Image 1 (cartoon, rainbow, N blue to C red):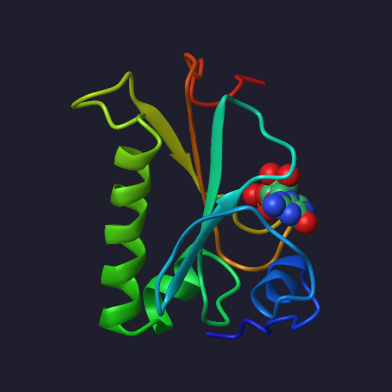
Image 2: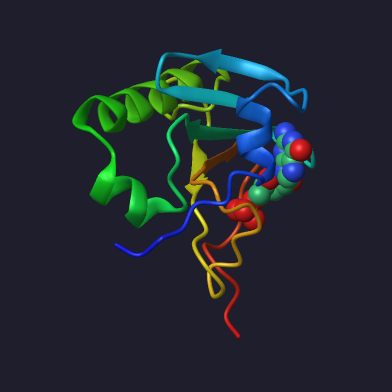
Length: 125
Ligand code: 5GP
């Protein structure tokens, strides 16, 4: 793959402790924190600690341990925040990639949004 990781992106700076964040959960491979501009009552970001630009980059190049940990942590956070559909009202998980995906921060992240109906998947244009 030809991705080039920008070490100055905002999430890299959060991971280095240069910018504060409201941490929800942290493991050796994964960090979860509240989005600074929440679009729903629950809006958290799940990020790997490794240097991955976007979803496909992470899936292709992360270790099995990183990939498993990321998803286990995401599931745990859904339960912790009360949005998991077995006990709560559900959520939407979104990851944006590249220009058409309108990705703002070039460090892979999964948005978990819930606490209200999230509407249609994408706007029809
Ligand atoms: P993207 O558009 O890349 O999928 O989403 C980036 C997300 O990062 C946005 O929802 C934005 O609000 C969030 N964000 C940007 N800068 C910061 C920051 O400094 N701290 C936190 N907690 N979230 C941020």
